[in-house]
Length: 319
Ligand code: XMP
Image (cartoon, rainbow, N blue to C red; front, side, top):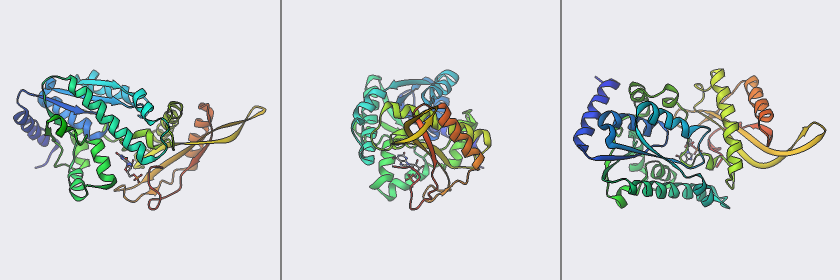
């Protein structure tokens, strides 16, 4: 009989057998899969687990603090937080091409993670949040975007250079099973049922060149959108929703003057598999509230638009 408690019991035993008294390293992103692995391994081997959380400056608002709060403070997991915002933004400077940006972010992540890992003594295992669909996907295609996504997320390449053995306790599970495990392990509901967030983060939601002040505006706009989606009950009805920063100036009238400020696009989709998606038919009242709040609360934004493109042909992300 499959119950989350049973799976956890089995995996805890398997991990203990595999690892013994040795040490395990985990790249914690704050996403569901790596979070569940962290909670599971913490239960299995406690202080033999060290997590590395890389803040690349392209995360959602307060995300880094939330990860530290949940894992380090509440659960007592050993988490090393690396503040690498300047490094990532420095490397991205001047780069406008989406795929080049993805590569820079992915490679920089591996460099930072590698460096942190090399400072920790006696690590023999690398834990990864690989789930069953990842296994199928990487067997089916070794090239293309899927592989880029996996290699970024699951830090491909590291085991070779570092000669670490892999610990992958979620390899046989589907996403909905992973979520149930997460709840059973005591992770917060909102973390376990959060919309997916791409590895390159805000790096592909700021069109063209990435700059810190763009990222700061986008983080605030996105937080307002998500807050209102949650308050209205629409967060659960959408599969993914976020704000996009458009680096174009549009006019707005403030007092007696005309001001030229940036444009924010809102994106919300309904989908089962993320291969096709329909734009979410959010109520006008909700869009109106979000738009008013973003324009009134955020200096630097003069206009908000709503994306009414479905996939295909439009992708979910804007880059
Ligand atoms: P698209 O934009 O291709 O997105 O319709 C489909 C799903 O994939 C996510 N996505 C990414 N995830 N690295 C990731 O880890 C990426 O480079 C990337 N690009 C898109 C996107 O958020 C959506 O859930």
